Structures are given as structure tokens and as C-alpha cells.
Length: 312
Image (cartoon, rainbow, N blue to C red; front, side, top):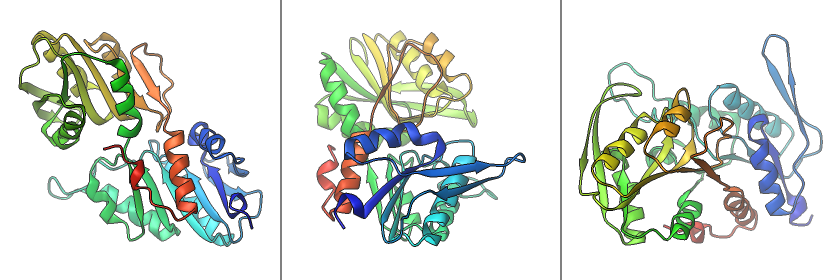
């Protein structure tokens, strides 16, 4: 069996756009699978070609709604029952990752539950990118290849050739990520300290550091309703920033996010294409991570190290 015949790549319904680009980069066809949907909303997954003895890579982000996660679980179960040699879940965006701990009494830890569901379904490995919390890797008892979007975002930032560059974190929790960017680019770091009234609602925000005359780039792992990042941009612009941009790995962009970004002081906001974005917003730019995942898949198949994939 040749190298190309030893593995197959399949896609879930909502991540097909990315899986096709991954296969194009790998120089292999996308595997043939069918999702049959019933009138009550239930659905079933089947593979239309033999996968016996193959390494099967299943590409599916688990963004809302929960059908995407359920579809991935059914794909894993079907692959296990079809005698696949290894089942690798390729999850560019790992949903429920914000539920990584008990931050108040009597709450679920959704990230651990999803990890348990994937493991129970039968995965042998996970390839994912920019988890909301790094410790989620420890929720799995199988190998986790945790990639970083900095591999595509950093070259883009460098291509802008911005003078007086300053990296900012929209909250204290993201300071480690922002500090890594600032060290690599050799520029100062600014933090935003925020307090929340409740989920997705900010009560107050203050800037820690000087942004006057700086071209500021706010770094985050995801943007959901865009309340935090747009408020931070507006405050920084009011504090004398020359320009404010933002970059984040995952384009969740739910509810009023697109309108908020369009009306904010942000010049642009850069995401990867780990999640499809269909709303029209002139300020949103998406960079492809297909080559990043394709190269990781290639190295997993060849049993090669993936550490050189990490830019920072």
C-alpha cells in the first residue's frame, strides 16, 4: 500500500470548504461520505468507499449548533465499525472550550465532556488549533497535536510593515498569548483589564500601558459577540492610538458581532478560516490554515515530528 493509499480524509458537512483545501494541499481526493437526514432532524453517516486498515482523518469543527459535534461523533463511530486502522479527529475549532473549569458552583465542564464523548466514540488522535485553554489537551487520553494560528497570522502582521507597533491583549487572561506575539515581534505589550456584568456583557474596561502614537494590534483566540474587542479598540483609539487592528484564531462572530466590528474604531480584524464566515463585513479578513493542517496530516502519516510547524 502506497503512502497516499494508507490514509483517507473525510469531511463533516459544515467544514467541507476547509477539508477540500486540505486535500488540495495534500494532493489527494476528499473521501466520499454521505450524511442522510431525516424529517425529524435526526441524521446518519456512511462511508461510500472501503476504509478497512486505513488511517482516517475526519475534518470537522465543532462550532454551534451541536449538530456539528454529533455529526463528528457519528463519523468516528462509523469509521470504527468499518475497521479503520486509526481514527484522527481534525478539529480546527474545538467548541465548548470556554467551559474548561468550574468557575462557579454547580456548573458543567463542557470541554471535558466533549473530550470524553470523542474518546468514547473511538478516536486515536486529535489535531486541533488554538484551544481556548491549553490544559484541555490533558482532558484527552490520546495524543493531541495542538497547532497555533500564529503560523499564518504572524507572517501577515509582518507583511503590513507597521511602524511603532504595539501588541495588546483584550483581557488579562489572554496576556500570555499577547506577550508571545510581542516578544517575537520585538514590540511593547499593553493589557486591558475588564470586568463583566454577565456573560458577553462588559461592565468596565481600563488600559494598562501607553498606546499614544502606536499602531496597535489586539490579539485574541476567538471573537464571539465582539463586545470586548471593539470596546478595547474604541478606548485605545480615544487614548491616542494611531491605528487599531485585531487578529484572532477563530471567527465565531455571533449575534451583533459584524455590526459592532463595522461601526468600531478597528481598521480590520483578521481571522483564520477554522470557522466559516458568511456575514458581510468589509473589515473582516480570513487567512487559510489548510496548508498548516495538511502538513501536519502529512507528518502524522509519515511519523515525523511536527514541532517545526510552530512559529512561536
